[in-house]
Figure (tube, rainbow, N blue to C red):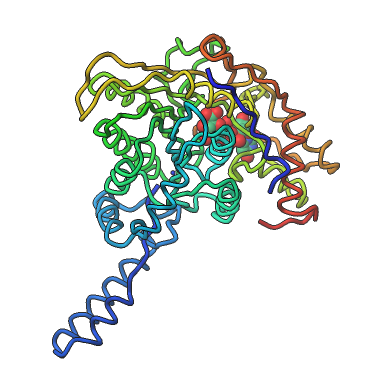
Amino acid sequence: MKQMSSSHMDNIPSTPGKFKMEKSSYIQRCKHSSSVAKLTFFVFLSLILVFFFKSPSTSSSSSASQYSASSSISSDLSRRSLKTSSWGGLAWEKRVRSSARIRSRNGFSVLVTGAAGFVGTHVSVALKRRGDGVLGLDNFNDYYDPSLKRARQALLERSGIYIVEGDINDAPLLKKLFELIPFTHVMHLAAQAGVRYAMENPSSYVHSNIAGFVNLLEVCKSANPQPAIVWASSSSVYGLNTKVPFSEKDRTDQPASLYAATKKAGEEIAHTYNHIYGLSLTGLRFFTVYGPWGRPDMAYFFFTRDILKGKSIPIFEAANHGTVARDFTYIDDIVKGCLGALDTAEKSTGSGGKKRGPAQLRVFNLGNTSPVPVSDLVSILERLLKVKAKRSVMKLPRNGDVQFTHANISFARREFGYKPTTDLQTGLKKFVRWYVSYYGSVKKTDQ
Ligand SMILES: O=C(O)[C@H]1O[C@H](OP(=O)(O)OP(=O)(O)OC[C@H]2O[C@@H](n3ccc(=O)[nH]c3=O)[C@H](O)[C@@H]2O)[C@H](O)[C@@H](O)[C@@H]1O
């Protein structure tokens, strides 16, 4: 097994694609047209295109709300992105090759989807640091502040990692990447995350976590060689289970949110592609991952922001004042788990879309094994920020949250020595240090 490197980045500074309009080519063509009829036609066409691309459900800013677009529009968009997306060309291919170049003996070449995301950024840096070739893929959607994703991208660029801007639903783009690079592994982290947002925008979960995953697997199964795939599932698949700690052997057929249901669907889809095509697939059930460069939609992150702003913090509690708790897991421990899973992933067995023998299929819990009540999380933040939180205790809303998570990690420990070492207090200290350095120490930060 390769050495696992830690990814301390606390001190250094998934979803429809982006569509760039090529208005100028139309304008130029209009200029050179001798026929008035042609001119009128092109102006008309341009107006339609401008209207189409600027309409709220299809704007190039890839807004979170656009996911509610109908499936016919989104598949139409995927096709359009081929004509208008900015990838391709010799300079682009050179950047792709250089980023994916392996720099250590027996190194991997890894396609990291969701590379501008929280876990994706940390995993990419750790892989690069140990000499693996890393190519990122991300659509930079605005489910949360895209400027944070751009800052992570800048961080990766400084490590020599290029992020291709595109969507996992874009099959021609994925095929092109596999044509250029014989990836040994795919670290698939692009997803629509967040439990509660699934009630607001269900189709974004289907688009990224189901359609996008299938699209990626379709390309991987036809690639030659087929890569081994490690991908992000979620602790939320344990749903309404009450037996703790959660073991991989437990039932996962009672999801409490559509998010959880799409991750569970991903696990079943993984089974199918493993069974039919011989793809090596490892799903990682992450337990509430937190840390520097984290996701602003997660409680520890926006609690920090709101405590500093003097805003009140909604702390959920279950019926009869029941404790709501999470097995919060620090990002560096998760990175070690991801690398351990990659290092022990066996090769896929198929080629040219045909299975040649049985392939590895695994699912692991990656948690911290010590659940902490949300109210204790707030107390730790108060101490670290030296600000008293305005607590507003409220009933756990019925929007997908479960009361309790707790990982049994013995399988990951046995298979690749996974052993989390960061408790919540230590991890949050690193997060707060990063938060203050990133957003400034001003208490009334506004992001
Ligand atoms: O473990 C996982 O698989 C999941 O972990 C997190 O989901 P969650 O644990 O719900 O994380 P947060 O949204 O940060 O919530 C943490 C805790 O704070 C509580 N909370 C959240 C929001 C709020 O306003 N108040 C509040 O008390 C939640 O009920 C939960 O117990 C991530 O958001 C998911 O993407 C991920 O898949």
